[in-house]
Image 1 (cartoon, rainbow, N blue to C red):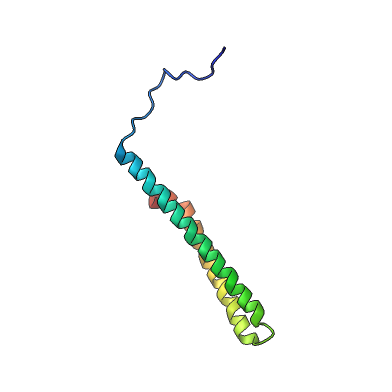
Image 2: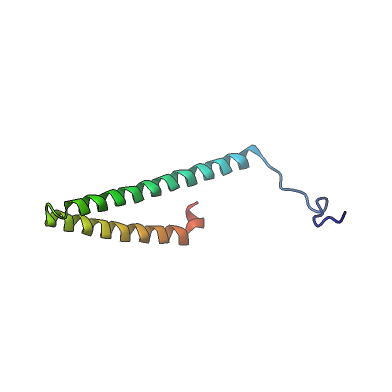
Length: 91
């Protein structure tokens, strides 16, 4: 049988408890960041839904709600772009 990998050629990196703890912390931070981002999206969708439901009742509040959603989404997108561009310096 012809093997394509030579496992004896290179030693695997040595693992230590400190490296594993750092990786565990990094994964926990990523999980928390994802949950916060999902919560932000759900909040924006709820605010948009409330604005749509307020449209027949009070158009002024509906317009204020739409404006809030637009400003908040643009700010969130700018923050997302900054964090993805400079991810290595933050994580």
